[in-house]
Image 1 (tube, rainbow, N blue to C red):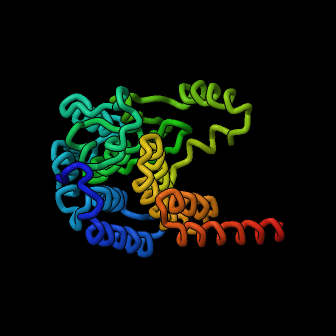
Image 2: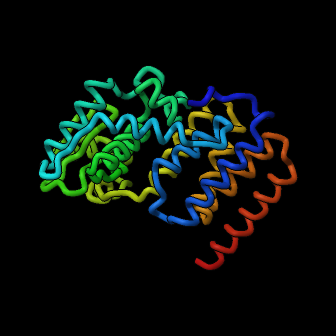
Image 3: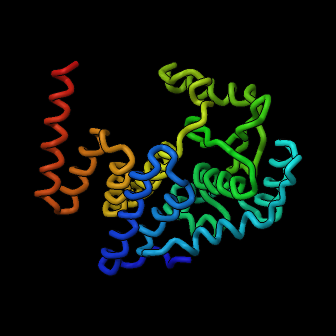
Length: 274
């Protein structure tokens, strides 16, 4: 595994390699980016490594403890995965230090066996995939979930809460509380319960990590997150603005000014077209 956050001065070349690998994955696979490799390269960029073999081998090792016979039904399959990850291995959500950037680092999630809803969900998806079960990511507001692709009726799993299983009725109550706080400005529940693409999962992971860095004034780390987000969603104007502002804060005045000029020009063009 990688050492935690070594000095930036020693990382430029390795980080460039990791970023290039992520760009290649996005260019090759589009919305179906391999989650394990993309998450591993994110971690490699943050740690300053040109190799993700240890991370992928670590996920393989986690999956070795799960056996799913060919004729197993989806409920029993989920029960076995839950028992392995949450009872035998002790994975659980990090409720004490929720905003710690380490909760979005694959190596730390595997070592400490704790993380955010989305990082634990991604690990759940990949362990299940290696065991022969397809699990979808569900972008529920404020709390990422997963759901078996072939379950009828549908049900949902919360890896942050040690694999708690929920039906749609339970999520209706949670959603209603969130919608009430948002004054009804949210899309309907059915929209939130649709499976998300792998690209959307990676966008949410980077947004979480960006927020963690910003809370600690980690502007350089936040800038890396924004740059990865631009790889994933290159047409997002707000990201160009955010990159410009971060560059200015970090003393990269020429690059920051170019970003903000491009943002303002594109925004003006969009408003003029509407």
